[in-house]
Amino acid sequence: MPSSRASAGLLMYRQRGQALEVLLAHPGGPFFKNKDDGHWTIPKGEIESEEEFLSTAIREFREEIGIDIDPSAKLIDLGSIRQKGGKVVSAWAVEGDWPAGHHLRSNVFKMEWPPKSGKFQEFPEIDRAEFFPIESAKLKIKAAQIPFLDRLEAALA
Image (cartoon, rainbow, N blue to C red):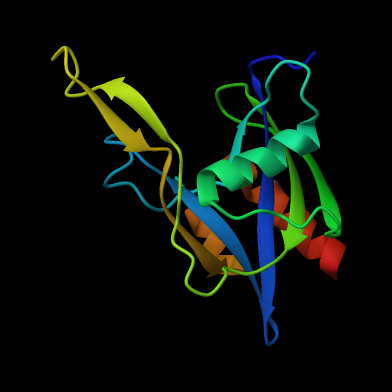
């Protein structure tokens, strides 16, 4: 059974001419409001009890981005990394694009805000998502997740 210290996610990519671009998500909520470089992430989430890692990745992509992945899509296993806090993240890459007219539809979380106010507010898990050229993505993404980008480049080479 997976531990609560495990997450799984999908890294969507597309080719624009010779340029490889990847879809990254910016975490929502007040702590990330003014943070940019080094804070973006692949869309991912915690693995629920008895859930397969790949199923989690696909579910979380749908919940955080609002896009369903074609079950017959070719997936590239990008392996796992360990983030600074100890959480292990497993990822797969899938070729795709932002559907015309699609608007980000992320699920929300509740937290006490402002701290110690006794007031709870809802915030989107993801407040922005966009495609970045691979070199820009390496500046935007959490440092621990850069190996996913490197592994994708190697798999497509």
